[in-house]
Length: 431
Image 1 (cartoon, rainbow, N blue to C red):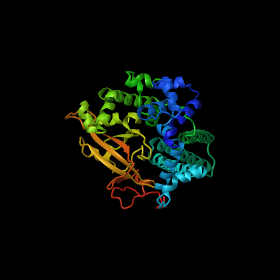
Image 2: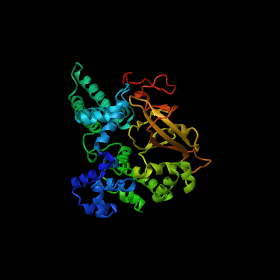
Image 3: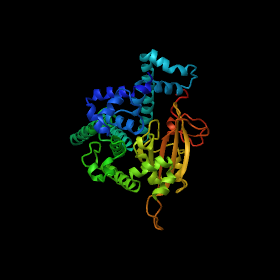
Image 4: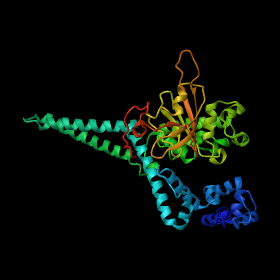
């Protein structure tokens, strides 16, 4: 029996794991219990919206129901083989390998995934260590305090007697500076140590705001149904600092404006009718391209048809908001590769750019990028324009020839002879 003919069995197995009754699952998905019974006994084929609805209620990806876990394993093996950089003469036998040796297949797939996670960790740490202003301030505090302690100790170590009053004063300074050094060191370790939960860590405000958005999948059904941004921000566990709450509130207010300009059901109908065409959507809903790009990035994958990422920056290139996407390595704190379409859009405000890019690195990754820049402030003869740029990023299954090469940042980019390089890479050639 083929994989796709066992969809019903997988639905029944998942339902029983969750402890759901057949009638309850049928009610939540809007079908009759008798029809669900036929599905679970593989007497009715399903797909499309019904499969997506069932997967959502059961808390799994639709592919896990239609193809099973073995399909995900085979996909991981194929991805590992494709990114290994070595010829694979037996790639056509990967399903046979996974079927005959499932344990070894799991080991290989797990190793590949672990390597990918470690590489992402290297990128994040390099970005953080190089460009994080909070880290730089903490290091400066530690170093300056250590220098003060050394200076005081040198005076006390000099030959000759000091008056008791001055000696007591130096001892007091030495004690205070050592306490400050200990406190600064603990704060630095706490900042770098992310082993604790989000609720126990006070991080960078923008990171807290993005963690809050990530916990909601960057989609807020409450705002779609008329809720208020203030109610969402109030009591949010991820928003520890006042600064992060202000950032999240402003982003949610922007989200609400975009949702009103492009209602969810109307956008879904437009996508089904005309496909993903931001310019056509802007004309249809009489709104700006930045609004369309932001709105598309907040749509659930079941409506957009795929995962998506989003990056917003100001005229200095500083990233103001970022929706992460698997494989997208655009650093948070400046010094990004200037070849990304996001920065190209800043050079010609109002001109939309669409470009297929190939992200350099050990695992080449292709993306379809839509970018545009606009004046964020009201135009005036007395003030300087405040340009912002937004870039919608979509993953490419097949990278077209002529895709534009881009990197993460010069420090971790292996590309050679790049005219945009600002500093040497810390990576060795074999990386």
